[in-house]
Image (cartoon, rainbow, N blue to C red; front, side, top):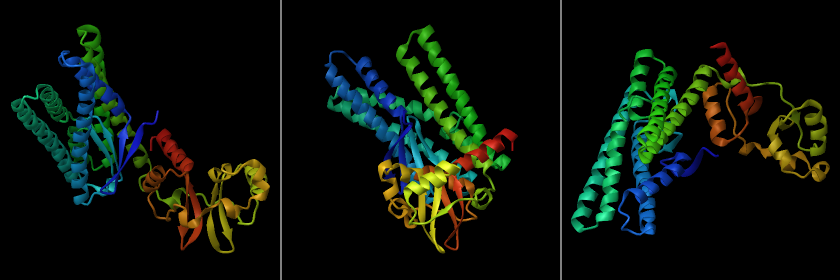
Length: 370
């Protein structure tokens, strides 16, 4: 199952939705259908349940947009935000933020939850006075849920607001952003597992299926989000102070534009096992050829196809510079979905960094405990 789905860009930030939202919509709709009077038709309760789910999603999104706007206004360049049921998780680099800014964003996140719960309550009060009992009941329920969410975010487990505040404190005390992230994320995982255990207990012992399922779901999502943030911190710490020049390979094959694809496969891929090629004629770099380019051409046409016809032109290739931090390279490879990046110096290719080399480097340092 695809874990995130791109929603678009806002303020230049990639907005992604975690797949657990699909489960949340089902649970919220089921809650509305079963918790409200059966005197109303089933189809009406289903529509209201879906509407309540969308309102909850919109309110969580508004909270994250306000946080993103605040971060950008404070000079923190956000790359992406992944929306979870309880909020979002932003992708920023250690160099882009400071402990005081982390604490500020945590405070704004808590305040946003309180304001949204207050808005829901005002809407509920207006609807009650107009006689819209069922819709008012839905809004009252959302007010209660958001009030619980406000309190839940005080829990000191990342990526909750309380966990973000804890990370800021640990970062200030230890001087290590990545270590602080790991500790806060581990706390988030433990709390998530405790919620899962509590949900199982409520289901089996108390026999309250809705409360039990909600605890299970919230604990699972929190544990998943905390684990994702921990996994992001591990490679950053392993690649700290490492640059593209340190990790690039300078042993890569050059090919010309006039070489046929059949020759490339026979002489380089099958004979030597190489899978990425730099196209150079004279002193000019023209582009690269990868396995994706090769597989796009039917085998019967390989001998008639020239490299010039299938290569990715240099103008469209994502490149790196020698002093670029390795953490930045990994983030860009993930964002652009590429497996290799040529390293340029004075418009000449001096090496190639591959995703495999980065992951191997991270794995090796992790095994050595470095």
